[in-house]
Length: 84
Image 1 (cartoon, rainbow, N blue to C red):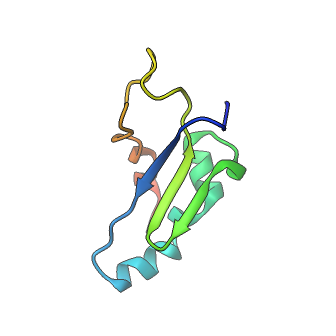
Image 2 (cartoon, helix red, strand yellow):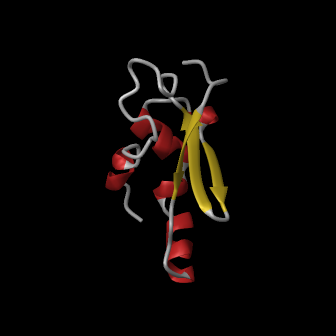
């Protein structure tokens, strides 16, 4: 995978400080757990904790013939199994 291209970025919106604290202590902010869900190298996962953001390389070029999720709106699904 060419990691120089575009990236998928997932924003996590939280209602309060307690939710934020619980989230940053969870596997949802563990680069290894995220990499495992998306089948990528953990070195390519970027985590931003204020606010919580997850970013990783797109597996294919955005808008290409084989891109089935141009706006990456469905890319959160593999994270649903991670307990917060």
